[in-house]
Image (cartoon, rainbow, N blue to C red):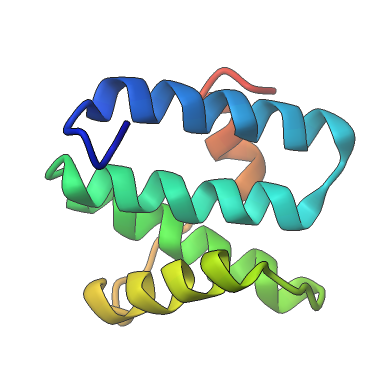
Length: 103
């Protein structure tokens, strides 16, 4: 749906997937969904939220090793290339999940 220009639907589908992965305790799935969500927010001109999510992904990824699917790894690489990596945020994954109504 994102490629069809329907960012609202793309965001809804991504958040639904994020909810499911979170409920299953699937950390890699949560991170993959956050990568997707960051791309959606960036495309939707919400760069501040995309940067915030990107920084959360980096902090969570540093806590424990994880292996992404090839497509998710490529999306993560692209995300890192397009977002200013020097931007700092202090929100946690838990706070973001609460903000999104998932937790």
